[in-house]
Length: 269
Image (cartoon, rainbow, N blue to C red; front, top):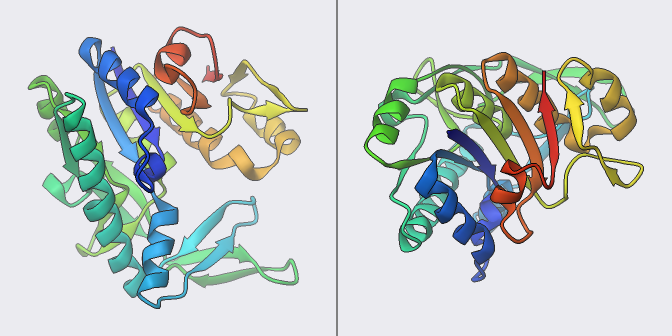
C-alpha cells in the first residue's frame, strides 16, 4: 500500500520528539511505501521575527488564513522549510531507521507552480478586495517519476511545500494541497492528515465518515478551521487517491489506528 502523510513541522519543535508517532511511522514504513509532506509555518514566523521581518496574514472570502509572501518572506520560507525543518525531520527519521530523503519542489523539478497574480482577501471592514499575489503559487505539475524511483529503491521522500515557479522563482504553496497533489501524482491508496485534534468535529464529536460529494454543505456547519484539509482531501480523491483520513498525530500509534479504522475522519467517494 502507498500512503501520503501530512505532518506539521512542530514534530521537532523544541527538544521534544513525538516518539509514539515516530515509532509507529517506523512500523508502518516496514510494510508500506510512504511519502511525507511537512508543514512548519509557525517556525517560518519565528525565524522571520528573529530576522526583523514582520509577517502579514490574510483571510480569503472562504475563511482560509494564509501568509502574504513577498520576495523577502519567500526567501525566509525557503530557508526554513527546505533547510532547517527538512534537515531535522530527515535526520530524526534516519535515527529511527527510516531511510528518508529530503526534497523541495526545486529538486528534480518535483513541484512546479504558477504564481498567483491576484489574491482576493477580506479587509478590516469585511469587504472583499484584490491584492497582489506575491510569491504564492498553485501547483500545476508534480514529478511523480522521481517519487516513484525513490520509493522503488526503498527511500521515504520527505517533501517541503516549496515549489518552483514558471520563472524558477521560489513559491509558497499550501502544505495540505501539496500533499494532495503529490498523492495524486503517484496514486496513493491513502492520505493521512495528522493534526492536533481527533478528526473533523461537529457539535464536539468526531464525524466518522464524510462523502467527498457532500463536503460543501458540511463546511457551513463546522466552520473554516478544517476547510483547507477537507478541500485538499477532496482534490486528492478526485485525482485518484483512494481515501483521506484526518486524525490526531498525538495519540498512541496514530497511523496504525487510522489505517485500521479505529480513529479519525474518513473522506471518500
